Image 1 (tube, rainbow, N blue to C red):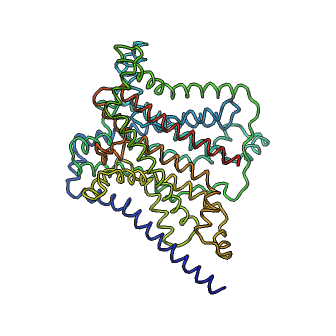
Image 2 (cartoon, rainbow, N blue to C red; image 1 turned 60 degrees about the vertical axis):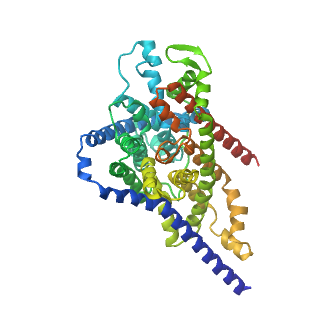
Image 3 (tube, rainbow, N blue to C red; image 1 turned 45 degrees about the vertical axis):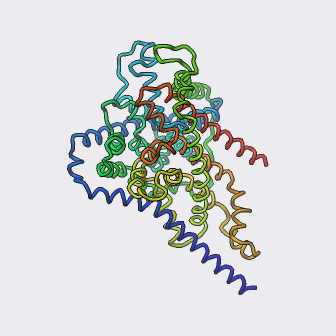
Length: 534
């Protein structure tokens, strides 16, 4: 029996090593090689000439100014909002927390379009209050970027505050330490490291986005818009490669910081949630602040609904379904089907791939596992536009170029890091001896995964599916370089309609994406709820 077990164990080790090497080669070909292809393409052009050009320097300055300003505003608003939900007894906290994540279900370009419809030259609020200030340019991009990035900042900060230990605050209160001293000595010390990660994440998100500035930037060009114009408009792939390399810089810095500066506070200790005492004034102010934030978030969505069902804005505001009919006649139904095919394929392939990789990296040791982990989180440091251009240069002429498979692959790679980390953290918390026990009982690794690990992590699996599907439905970055008329996702119709000044159609497409993503999120919620009851 012992010889049989040793033989079985050796076979399992060999099989695991083979699978890890195969996945490692696949991820290298899907992530590393395309990126090197884009960076290598820079050798074909005069980098100094591009960097010193009249378009590049202003675009770089604009990107830094917009991202820096919007990041500060987003984090301040999100931190106060997170405090309201986590540290107060305000009513409807769960509903409010879900509601403010709605902007994450539509493309960033839709936020810019919402601002144009509200505060543009013929915007609803502009006409209603006879406003003279122009929303186009710096102020518009910052406002749209805050709407786009605020939910991300809120979720990250709320998660940090939720697990903060309340014991030091209780001790400080007993000792009579003033509130201001408590903030700098306890709160700020706890938030310092994770807050840096949040700042990097939000800054990178805004710095690499081209949806908002493309819609509302006007002549205030940013680096992502310049890259979009050079690659899509002028087919200058060499210039696009140079600009893309600059877009990589903040993402790489954020990636390296997260990699080498893990926050180890409270690990190994039993933490206690901070108590929330009855305080009517605090709860009233928290409720008022939350209502204001939710109203600002709801405005663009309300405008989409309004614009979709009017005949011609702003000339004829009568109710009509003509814009919906016209949008469908222009292929919205076909492109929506394309998006559903792509998003479903990404959800299935991405979840399976991420879970398998997370299993080996979280539950097996060795250099191969460490390499897989590093490659899997590398996509965090690659903006969607850069990844799309990399795929164009690397896969052009191959059998998958211009097919659904290409779009499914690029979206899987683009959005893999976050779901992978979900599975990695969940699998790492389970008993590490399960495989050894199964081997002793003659149960194979595959049966342990299917019968034990997946049921134990089913909530994580559902969240992974949701993350892949939602992001794939609304992305416009990587796919804008790779799609054709036959496989174009519906999200790209927004940029197309914006160019044609058919904002009613763009609003309807935004609503379609929102409804699809909200439906999937709702289904996932009820599935999770059913699993909890079981």
